[in-house]
Amino acid sequence: MGLWPWSKRRKVQAAGPFVLVRGRYDAAQTTPDNRKHWANADHLSADAAASPDVRRTLRNRARYEVANNAYARGIVLTLANDVIGTGPRLQMLSDSDDANRIIESEFMAWATLIDLPGKLRALRQARAQDGEGFMLLFNNGNLNSPVKLDVRLIEADQVTTPDLSPMQSAATDGILFDEFGNPREYHVLREHPGASNASLGTRYDRIPAASMIHWFRADRPGQSRGLPDILPALPLFAQLRRYTLAVIAAAESAANISIVMKTNIPAGGEAAEVEPMTEMEMVPNTALFSPEGWEPSQIKAEQPATTYEMFKREILNEIARCLNMPYNIAACNSSAYNYASGRLDHQTYYKSISVEQTDLEARVLDRILAAWMAEAVRVFGIADAADAGSEGHQWFWDGHEHVDPAKEASAQAQRLANHTTTLATEYARQGKDWETELRQRAREVALMKELGLSLAQAQPATQSAGGPQDQNKEDDDEQQQSRQAA
Image 1 (cartoon, helix red, strand yellow):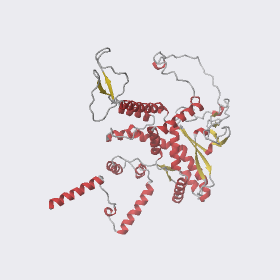
Image 2: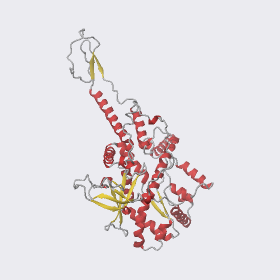
Image 3: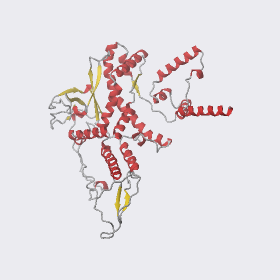
């Protein structure tokens, strides 16, 4: 069965009589009760809904919130640190150990030199607040490395087409596609439109798609540009800040008014006459006699309300949900969690992190490695390097620390004993290369035998988990024993 020739698509005439099927759905009905709620619903395409003006507004608001909201900044930074960590590590899987070793060491040295982990973290932050991140692959002659390939981050504002014609059906703002829907070239402004020295913004470069990496999450078929990951949470961030400021303002207002004089005597009664809004200076540690018929009372501090903490918890939980992030990570507060709840919530989050890392490998890291290999083969003159790159590789990421290392170690030993896992899998959980770790362990065992040390003697001395508190307890016990001996 052959594939459909996309380039020769044509209109197909429907055969047979046309039958209209009607159905009734409650959500499809427009009533006076739901009219306002669905007022902004539209039938626009993915690219039409994410028009340049819409994306610009959302980017600006997301950046403003991340810059001024401590929770928004912390959530975005935590997400970037958890996805990227200290950076990916490369393992080549060819049969040539020499080629594997050279490629792995030289690539990691190059990645450290250009600060690839830092740029990847910035790329993840850009996707969270801007909706998309761009990386330009270019040749840097000033780079102190045999491989002159370099990576430059580009903000989404610069990827645009100032003279885009509405008649260009194969183009979206900043991207030109071929007949199969693949990006052919990117249009990048030479100056950032928000820069102080920016020109009229009409000069741009046409970058081939092979030199540009575009990372975003497509939520709809046919979507060409990204929207901020924190988009659904933007109104909630604003409400959180407004409510906090309102609570503080109410508390300050109550604190500024020290005492109010009130009377229960009706107008025209026997109470002493006092001009409205009259002020009376209060001296600390003194007793005062109030005017006849007037009783002093202090304003009660009604803020923060008892529901303040509950409101912040619920709104933060809703904010973090669009990122698959549990509340205790978003709020950096696990005081209301027990061990089982924390583990259960983290499972969904870590699965989301794994999905993002896999997507990052396919769409970003593999392309960077391919561009680096194309130059490294020529620079290092490794005959087996090209074959090594084509035979496969894998990426390792930082492992997730277990809350209870003793339980995890016991479970790991059981999995290895009943052959339900492998050393490669267990080391990969920690972000380590099993071959490297085993070679290092072999060297350590050989050195212990050479020095005549047992495994117990070679182990480092461990400190008490209690730290200073346990040390103080030991000191107190020694002093008590000394007093008893005396």
